[in-house]
Length: 139
Image 1 (cartoon, rainbow, N blue to C red):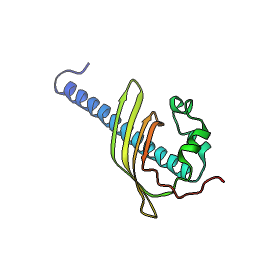
Image 2: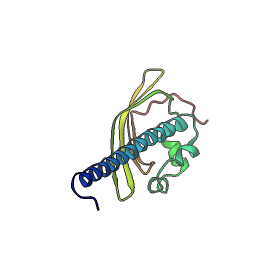
Image 3: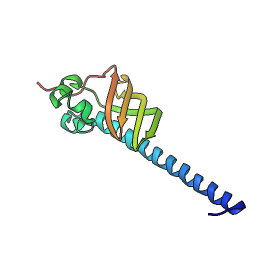
């Protein structure tokens, strides 16, 4: 064990590495979570509900089938701009929880408030208010 100034230096460097690793892990996780949320919106607007459904956490996917998701999001318009200026995350016991809050805007000017909660990169909750409709619908 190092003692004196050398021990203090080693301790400070070790603490710095742990803090840096936490930031890197957290920020990379946030980027992945925003990508997942954007992919969900893109798949849903394109009518690709099976693909959108695979992005859901099992806790929500088991309660809502692909058909349920299709009914909820039918005719959803494409968001040309998606922004998540508010990102909150925490990591505990090897799990990462993220809450994303932002807006989506369509080419027609419709704007929706967006909120996504994710656990380890899978969507556990989403809210799109109002849902901008105008996209393709099944006949």
